[in-house]
Length: 249
Image (cartoon, rainbow, N blue to C red; front, side, top):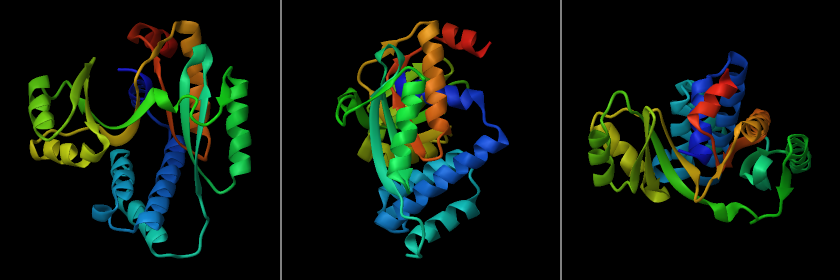
């Protein structure tokens, strides 16, 4: 696995402190509110809201928090107006990076993101510079210690999944963006629990990193993720398990 899926795995293994979790819930709540405001409060009729809610559930966000966020968006109440912005850039060793932001102050966000790239050996690029490296797809992560590849493959492929990729002790089920919900429901119906299901950006090609560049890349990814306005970060790096273990040590 590489790029965003590798980063998602790294974040899952690292765990989160209470402070980080509070910030994560704030970001998830913002995404739910914006999705409900733009497309209505019924997840069955609003795929963006459905995906935002599923992501919140996967992170164990309390049901009351999710419902309040939907009500804020769908209720039409006065509140902060958030703008969605996508930044593109390059990290260490030419790694392609896409940063999705929801912000109430685009000038602040632009300055913050530019500063993070500059401080960590990267640079912002013009729109379209790296977007071609990625494609929007559904991704479902399944614990490979609980289920066999045949079990996952049978349920996923029959429901329209495009591929099932093994990575260590996990399986990543890949789908077309429009098929994510159907494949997710099929896995659930088959009794297969999953750790994460989301629309994401999968890299078409990757940059394999040695330890020094891997360390720099982890720093810029952490810094971007830690920014309050940043919702998602995608990148096309590939780091070996050996190097990941060395960095963790």
